[in-house]
Length: 208
Image (cartoon, one colour):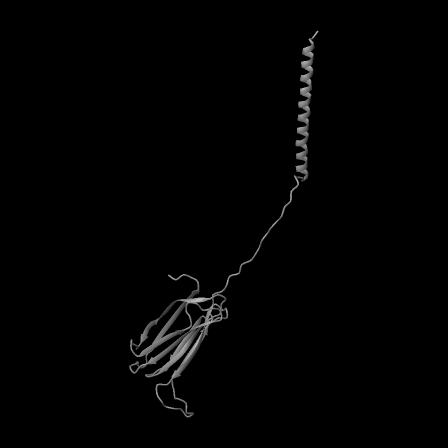
């Protein structure tokens, strides 16, 4: 016969084993339940808030164009039949819209039938037709090609600015006044082509 103490020990061991089995069953059941809830789309309860942002950006336009006015002063005091100063010289000009944006970035000017003592004065209007301020970055003037029958004397040119070349606001202008005097030693039957190139940048651009 087994001893009494041995029987008690065996019963206690069986009870502990049963308890462990129940615990494992509970854990397995909980794990299966969590997996099932996850598959079904359930999770622990929580609150959420969703923020979003979208936007657009448009850039401005740097656009400048010419306008031009001039006046020819005769080099003598003769009058025509109407009493106005007699003059046989004149100035012509043509605007050029190279990129067809409605703004004239090109200006062609010609003086014909000039003679000694003739004065021509005018104003070049650089108008800001864009949406951001501009400033004058560089200006270059010179002679194109080889003059025919022309030398360094015979013509005097003076220029002056009105306005701020450092900041030309939209719808504002920079004015360049010029004065051309053909002196007494201007050559006869001569030909000369000239140019003036102006480069503008946005007003806050650093200059080299």
